[in-house]
Image (tube, rainbow, N blue to C red; front, side, top):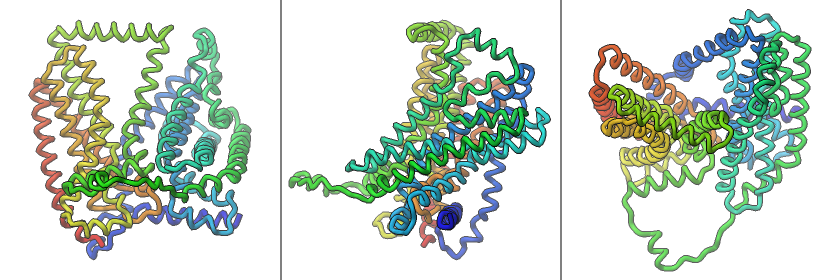
Length: 577
């Protein structure tokens, strides 16, 4: 136990110490950069609107379900959502901390048992996942508690839930990861195997989360009977995947704190089973990560000439950046695939719920065809065509803002250099050109990530009878917003890069630049959208003229940010040592 405590403290200290580190050593560093406390305060201010929305959701959810006696369903849904978020987001983090961090090769030769290393690393992940869970659930629980006039027992159970709720989904994620790494220890390409395996596990986790509820399988009469029975009779339908949730929700809904020890007991049993199994599996998988293989393939003279042929510096640098992104599992998962995973989490349940209303899939497609036909008929009306143009223009802006802001390629472009940052000073290429190449490497995933959703939106718009100019303007807005967001994110990372990190996960997920840039873009983008809507409804400006003016203004803003980025690159990168 003493070794576990010391190792945990060292790992936490190293991780927390690097959380706000930039690695720059310029003489004017303190005078030109905000302190870490001020930046955290700024981030909290940016998060206040989202926290208020969660608070309102807790209050309104209680007021809606309390008359039916089903207020506990809101708590169970919130806890289940928090658990699924931990399971999905924790998978790449656990893989990074357990198998890909720089301390692995240092810890293995030490006189430490596997369970001690696993326990310490599990605790480190638990600290960060608890903070994420608290951010998601705490405002909602406060809103629920204030609306219900909850007593001390609710707040005690809520505190216990916030602290222990991540344990079970983390144990699931870690066990899945260890089994997968142990099975694939003989594979030659460990990076590719890890990436593909993580993507597969994420898909399976999302599917399990969507189909774990029994509400879809119950007949309507039985569901209505339970709903009208009151006394939180619906509580327990989401507890199949996380069996400890049932007892936590019962303790929080006033059925007695006697259920809280049962919540502790179930959580402890799952944790003990995990540590026992992990102690048997961990070393076998982690030792294989240090093995390397070579194809020993001979190349011909023509192939050799092709490999060493001269290329432009810009294209070579962009290719290098893309190779680094796609060959490093953590970068691929957190910077590129996140553009596809998160929007899918919202779209897939909506599509499934739509088709679940019909007896067969063919009936669902027929209903969708009829809906599109109705849109096509409505498009003949000039007023409906104007509404369609507004939906396409506003939808293009909103989709690009939401999806593109999660593109962390540019937001971590300098930080991902890490200890290899010094190489940027010796390359026969100006700092400005290197930053341009990094910007191009970030624009490509951003454009690809938003293209699919824009095509769906434009296809619906075509059925709706949207004018051709609206479709073209929607595409132009997407390009302009994408370019501006990437320039801003890269400028932020140029000004304050995080160059000191122990593993790739810290360079991305524990990088304050990426979080702050995303929040600032959401706030500014939301304000611009509100201004657009206010001008449209207040002064009844034609949608085409108003959208054209806003597009031109955003393009001018892009040019300004781009010039600031290039000037900052020449000055800031030269100052870093």
